[in-house]
Image (cartoon, rainbow, N blue to C red; front, side):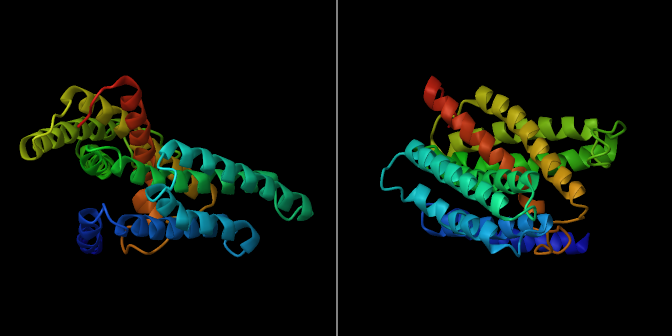
Length: 281
């Protein structure tokens, strides 16, 4: 427990400067590093980290994508999304060609899993950039990614520890309970509303507290699903942790599993807000 606490404190001190300078090149650089480490952990877990033909193109795109999104010369995130889709399609064709020429050494299911999981990680980390740069409110909204993931995770644990009696999905994550899941959702909603009130008071901007609460419920559920998804992958490949970069916590993917899911969810919420004219913050 002491090791986990010390690691968490160190991580917070590393994270704070990144958040303070989130409007600069420091932010995409940090996400680029997180992406590279996450991809390496994924590839090592799947046993393809020593196959350069498969992983090097993904490393390259994972490293440059956050910079391409922020400093997009086209100035339109949707244009970047279209380009990313085309790049993904080309890589998929390239991956299929590797399957054909590998003479059975690269299986179809394994190749598709590599593609799907790598695309998930890269898209999710880029979603953090998208939310951060989303209009005037982006400088506050992107913090909800971390708040939503960490509040849900922490209070699901404590609520489950104190009141948990009914298992959520025992064969995937034996310690998670229905009571813990509900506790994570409730406290995430409270945290979002509290954050909205703080921003409204200190920044003088409007905050749609009702929609923030609704978004919190949705994102908290997504956060827990993201956690379970990465747990399923670990169980499938029979590993305990993705890495050891965070003593007492595991690897980068062990710490960012919920954040990846929440970032994608909040990006979709921002798109919905754009279409409907509803304002979050």
